[in-house]
Image 1 (cartoon, helix red, strand yellow):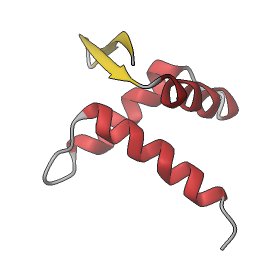
Image 2 (cartoon, rainbow, N blue to C red):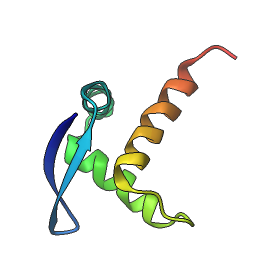
Image 3 (cartoon, rainbow, N blue to C red):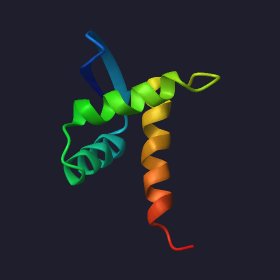
Length: 74
């Protein structure tokens, strides 16, 4: 696990994820021309609209999984 501190909506928060998830998030952000904090902020905004609201680390993992699924052959 790797912990990172990030500012979301003006507040610092600490996020703990496995290294492969951090790597995937960084690759996605780079491929989309965004910074990692921008990508995480967008995922966080979407997560806050869900009911029940998932934890941020869970939302990040699911985001990465969804991206991987979209690349798998159907």
